[in-house]
Image (cartoon, rainbow, N blue to C red; front, top):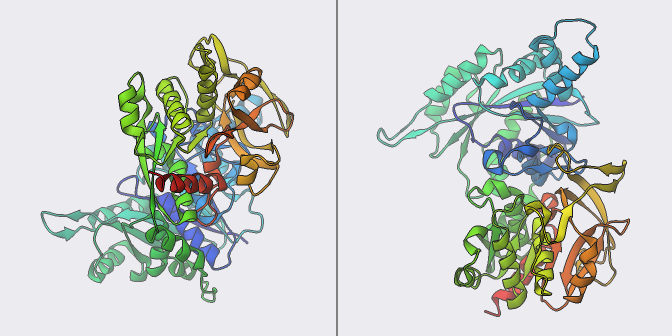
Length: 544
């Protein structure tokens, strides 16, 4: 019988509910329990796939091709459990499915309403795919009191009545602000937030109180009295020096023990936190450092590259070095050679990440050229690989080389993919069609050439599976001129039609991949491409 932990947030947004859910799941997992985490998003988009990264951060893609909230990246990184399509739902998806059923006549003439139809759909989502899990953690996006989250709150209330006693538990994440002028922590926002939650019929069992300063026992007791919980259930959550410190910090504050007590579990095995101690040791005690430049389009918001940021950190852990990430707007390089040299010369590695649209494309191409000519380790991901191919064709003297994503191209080195083979059969798309969910999404296999650099990075593997999210592909008609320029297409789709990886044999470390390896990197299992890239950057640092 799966037990449910419902996680809500109050007072303000961005309190770290996703990180809290991931950390609690990791602690329960460390005690030997099987866990899964789900995210309920109240917005009306069907998924975040069409949303700007500046609106919502990165879009996280699962093996089965779901475009999801970035919190699912935290869930996977902290637990190692691969997320699925059934682990993220939005109001938009719920309403779309209900309206489709209503148009089809599935409701047999009934009036379709928020209660019971919308709430029943939300409840069914929570209850589906339980497998043989011990705990399912359900995080509700937004803040208590938001209009759009009310159907989700009502569904939680109903579920707590529908399920058995001691089968559900409510954790409320709130804020205890410090008022500098008064020199005091204030508990009133937490009291109001809990009262708002109670007005919706949900009584929290555990309060996780975010604070910048330690919360004295007197204030914890005050919160407990006014919020009708035990003092031991008021868990301080102070700002941590790293997200990888959070599981250990929450364990020290008794979060996992209190949650288990709330379920009536008193004989749980102690947690095995050895891997988390190793991760924090590698993070806080590096034996060197490297400077990595990320030449991107959305560098003004690091959440737009959240998984990439963490994968670079993991690569540092694998090599026991600190990774100093320099976020550089690709637009500043366009037509300014002196600026390119000034920004890129101090770097030990250059990474061009994925992205959409033409803005900054010429700056990314200039960064590829600099890395190629100066023999600086280069890593191109998705659009980064495509720009490496465009730069290679231009280096061959074909000046009109570009991508049709940016407009009409005289030499379309990169073009829209209209059909490809997946496990479900041939997938077809057309230019000008819907943008949402129409890319090559999810895990696909690639065949690697034996004895290639990319194969060596994967420990000699000749078949790999990686996650994709893109609408354009390198035009295979340009493979021959590119290979004459030294680019080697060592990775191809199983049917041999779609280029998956490129590399240079005349360069110390030059790799481009069409997929997104950052999505599969974990702190306790760094992705080999990032471990290899940081290792090459470390070698570069010793040369300069």
